[in-house]
Length: 299
Ligand SMILES: Nc1ncnc2c1ncn2[C@@H]1O[C@H](COP(=O)(O)OP(=O)(O)OP(=O)(O)O)[C@@H](O)[C@H]1O
Image 1 (cartoon, rainbow, N blue to C red):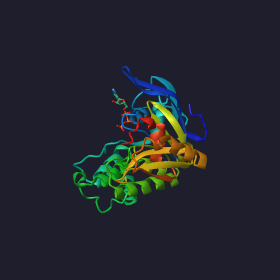
Image 2: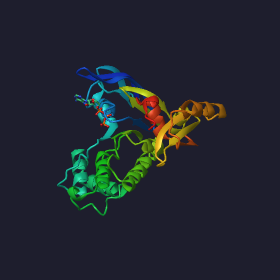
Image 3: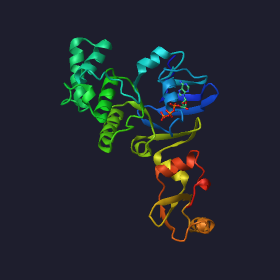
Image 4: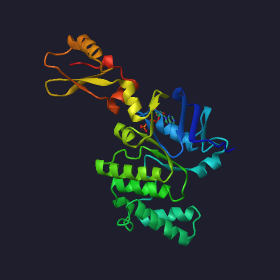
């Protein structure tokens, strides 16, 4: 049943275990239509497991999730018709050319020969692959593969796009070019759910970020909102080699900064210097995931 509302994705109390390992321990989240949502978490946090459930590749043990109002278990067919999915590993055929990969997907999706030709030309242009159209995929760089993978997954236009770590392993230029493509897809009205280990990626792209740790969402908000939760200012301690040895969130008030410095001064080597700066997404991540600041060594 399609329940009309402003959220494209709704997740409620979702749980999943593999044997005794609890991977998703009650996930709740909502993604508004036409926005980019980034799920941020370290390796093994359960991001792919969640995407697999949302894209109907796997079933939850408990809880429910809806995509465009359709339940991922009972309305599986409708969910599949509402989503495009691009995984961590490019799902394109290495022996074929970029052109052949896209046209094959067009034909498999039921487009006529004429429609397939038009769509392929359009996608090659949109993903900056026109010059590489006749080249075999095995000769492609990582960035070109990701662009082709995205093009193939968008042969049929769907309202929701899942991107599982879309830029992992890419160099900075390829990453930025993919970010531009992702932002353009949002401008065209798509809802985009992406997972990432890169804080900068979430910071640059996402309207809303959820930080995942130990099978739970430990915080959600905009990049700015999450940074504000960490504190007004961060004290950064650096050693004589100018290496950061510790960061400590503070409210930014004189009293708080003075108290914090008093508390830690006797623990620091004499040549330690301190700097005060605005929190970054790295600080947010460290503060919200399992790392206990007190355990970080000062030497
Ligand atoms: N099919 C499975 N059977 C058993 N364990 C699994 C299965 N799928 C995932 N896991 C385990 O669940 C945990 C979460 O894995 P998942 O791939 O969802 O994490 P992730 O956040 O996507 O990490 P990464 O960034 O490394 O891809 C891991 O410990 C993984 O070994």
